[in-house]
Image 1: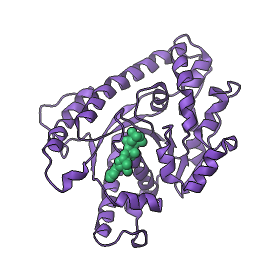
Image 2: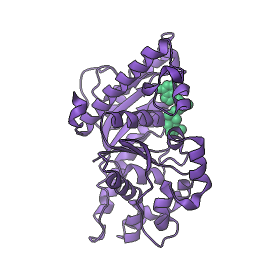
Image 3: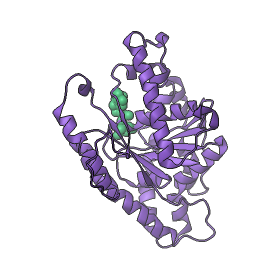
Length: 335
Ligand SMILES: Nc1ncnc2c1ncn2[C@@H]1O[C@H](COP(=O)(O)OP(=O)(O)OP(=O)(O)O)[C@@H](O)[C@H]1O
Ligand SMILES: [Mg+2]
C-alpha cells in the first residue's frame, strides 16, 4: 500500500481537482484506491458526491459517516480510539472517506499534543497518529493498494497530522511567484515535520502500534498551466515556469545538478496539467472526471479530442507517479 499526500500551502493550485482525476484514473487502471478528504473545506467530497448525498452526510452528523466520526471518539470525546471510517463507494475500485468542516475543530488538540509526544505521553501519540490510523483502517477495509490524501492550503497542525500519514508527498504548483514562495516554505516545513516526528518516535511507548514512519518522501511536482497560456504566449508564465525545476530541487534539498532543466526534461516534473476551461464545469456537472465525459454530457465537437487528450495526460501522470513511488500496476492494465 502506498499513501500519497498532495500538498502545497499555496491555495487554489488545483490540488483537489488533480487528486480527483488521479483517483479515478488509478481506479480505471485497476488499482484499488481510497481518496481521503482531510481538508475541512471538503471540496473533494463535494466533487465526488451529489447534493442529496452531501446533505445526508452533513445534515445528519449523528450518522457519523465522515472522517470526523472516525476520529471523534479519541479527539473530541477522549473516551475511545479511532474507528474504521465509513467508506463511500464511488466505483468498483474507488472509495472516498468524506471530509467534514468539523475537522477544523481538532486543530487545537492536535497542536497541543505535538509537544506532549516528546514526553512519551501515549495519548499524545494516539492523537497525533489518528489520521494515519484512520487511513490504515480504511485502506485495509477496502483492500486498497493506494491512499490519496487531500489537505487544505496551510502548514497547521491538522495538515501535519495528515501529511505525516503519507509515505510520499506530491506538490501541485502554478507557474507564478506565489507558488515558488509556497515551495520555499514547504521544503523546510516537511523537513521539520519529518525530523520532529523521528525525534518523537524515539520517545513512543513500546506498546503503541500503528504509528506512521513519517517518511513523506518527495514524489515530484505537477504544474497547472494558466488558462491564458494556450491563447497567447505569456512571458510571465515562462519566467516562473523555467525557475521551478531548480527551486524544487533546492526546496526539497535534492542533489543539485549542473544541467539546466526545463519542465519538459525535469524528472521531478510529474506532469504539466492543461487548463481544461469549460470541460471542467461539464465534468463537475456530470460528477465524473473529464476523461469520462461523453457527448451526452455535452462533450461534443472539439471537446471529444480534448477528452481523449485528458485521458492520455492522466494515464501518463498515473504511470509517472507509480514509478516515483515504487508502486506496481496490476498486470492487465499494463497491456
Ligand atoms: N486543470 C484545470 N483546468 C481548469 N480549471 C482548473 C484546473 N484545475 C483546477 N481548476 C480550477 O481552479 C480552482 C482551484 O482548483 P482546486 O480547488 O482543485 O485547487 P486547490 O489547490 O485544491 O485549492 P485549495 O487550496 O482551496 O484547496 C477551481 O475552481 C478549479 O475548478
Ligand atoms: Mg483543495
